[in-house]
Amino acid sequence: MRSMKQRAMGSEDKAARRADILAAARALYRQNSYQLPSVAQIATASGLAKGTVYLYFRTKEEIFVALLAEDFTGLLNEVERHFSTPSSAGSLDAFLSDYMAYLKHHPELLRLDAMAYSVLEQNLDIEQMRAFKLGLTQQLVATGAIIERAFALPEGRGTSLLMRTYALTRGLWQTLDYPPCMSELLAAPEFAPIRPPFLTELPQALAEYWRGALQAP
Image (tube, helix red, strand yellow):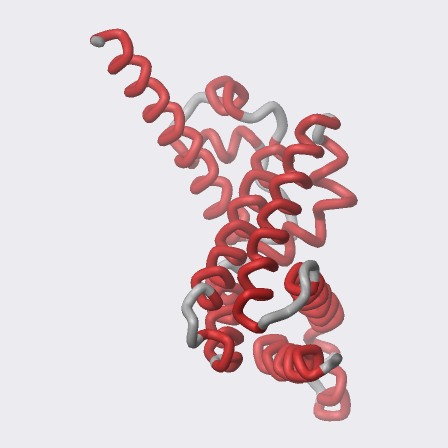
């Protein structure tokens, strides 16, 4: 019994240390989201030796894939929470408000996702890649099923709505995420039509998409 307790405590300690590493990485990345911090910087911020970080993650890219997975899970949990109640189907505005609030409080999600194909996933082995993609797929399908029940939609339609919602989110973000030098140039009044605020433009676009999609036969 004593050895079982010690092993359980060890597992809890490892999970806590892993969480500390991810929290430190997230905080550093939020300071400069145009460049991934090094493992050495993450180790210092988390109060650990660099070698200790490598016991949990083989590369810095693996750390940020784990953060991306956390953020995707949190976003899908928000969707599930909203549409799990019987009356949720009629409150599209409330759903979009929650969706936007999550993006606002997790600004690293879209930038990390934009780096996924070109940077992060290039440094994962095939089994890590498969686990990441499979976990995300399973969450999407499960959340899609909740949407299907809320709106009496056919199987697969909820997952499609989620995929298109995120594609629209990411596409608008990439279109409007101008680098600092370009933002300064486009601050002139004549460029106003091509620089609407992302946090204003996205909920309007999503509301139009969802209302049209739910009315389609």
